[in-house]
Image 1 (cartoon, rainbow, N blue to C red):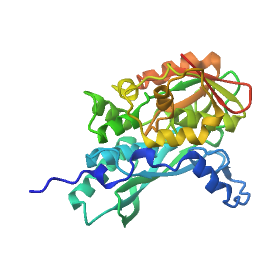
Image 2 (tube, rainbow, N blue to C red; image 1 turned 90 degrees about the vertical axis):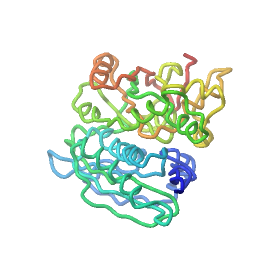
Image 3 (cartoon, rainbow, N blue to C red; image 1 turned 135 degrees about the vertical axis):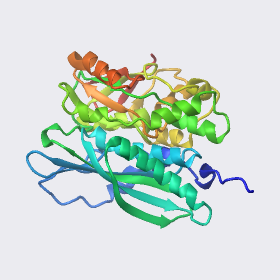
Length: 349
């Protein structure tokens, strides 16, 4: 009997590390014609937010997003779970509650058994079931690399939409998940995964960011975004640009997944972290002598990463306690927003 095909061997990249580099994406979008003015379009492409938002009426706004990628692991059920969790995260990041999803499926049907594809879809369906939403349809194609994800739709009150542009000077920054998914996925492909690393990666990437819906009703929360393919620095920089502020971040503050520091100091990194730094490094101030491995962690692409929350300083302790109580044990206060031109200032920490 032949050995089963490794899903990751069929893809040139994996997870949110597949995203176009920020600089490439900006160049592409710079030539895209501006959309006509639609009074009910509350959030569009202006600040690279997590999802689009359309006002339905005085009580409801529709949040719409799509996300898909290639395998970051070989287990098909886990791949489906990770991809679905990641797609739903954009809905939660806007403060919304998902209502249903559509599946996006591209599979090399000549190389993958039907049973493997079924397991990928079953993994995604299990996550949606946990979120209380159906997968109500979708679209599939025959592709050279395995691709899976969702179109995700949710609802939120128009006055409680959370965006990445509402931060205020003096806000405290809270990150709800540990960093290092990209580094662990690279170690997995290189067969260097440390003991406990795979389990930690799966637990993090399949943890639904459901707390985002509650944050939309939490006093003092001004802005939220989820940290995915552009890494912590990249998504924080988008928040800074949206609000017209600078950020200071303590490099040692974010929690790290099992084994990540040892892997990073040993030279394990993703190509996406290098592309990320090349795309936005000019807007990041690093302290003298800051080691490359620490920079790599801050640029590391996070597949199904945590929420980055900007909250008023006098409410920060309460919000941190709220997300910890919701089960996000790796939540940490990681920095703050300050007056200044949009940039990120990294403190040695």
